[in-house]
Length: 224
Image (cartoon, rainbow, N blue to C red; front, side):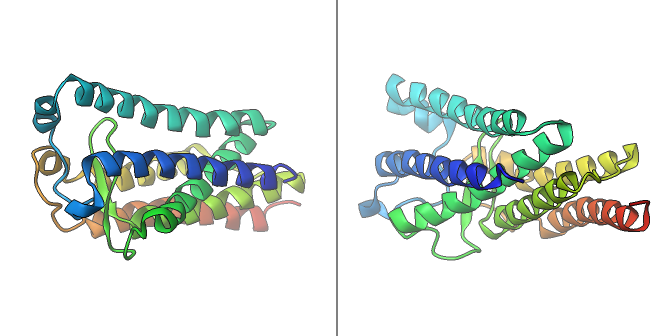
């Protein structure tokens, strides 16, 4: 638990860097005078038509997003003493980073105007789109879960996990990701987002959350 403040500080600073990069990109492609960031986003064909410089910038952006995930994973690996702690620190770092990313954008650009505002979350390997509320829910849950795991680690009572627990958490997480990517074909072809697939999102979230709660219940009723 002693590294939690440092991980949080790192994630807040990293979120600033990410938000600053996005501010620059939006100034180039969605300047405030033209209405700012909005859907539909530029298609691959439109970016190619802008010239080699812009195509190269798209490739760099793909690399930046991949590097972001590598950095969040690496900080968890470095901070954790075992796999459970590494996952916990990753979850905390990811959650803090994502929430503060939106807070920094609100400070820089007064965006998003509301929690139901649509955002382009990732473009690797396909576009992920959702109202801001959806990733914020996931990030808050990751932060809380990570802190709980570290609490039990600090007490010398690591959470007892089974293969079924991991299967349910993984399945729930993939279902949430599927809800983000559900409309990708429409997005990459220059369409405005269709209504978000909240049922799919909520099913995935509920499955993963229920599996984690079951682990906690088993922990409380198990041997000290």
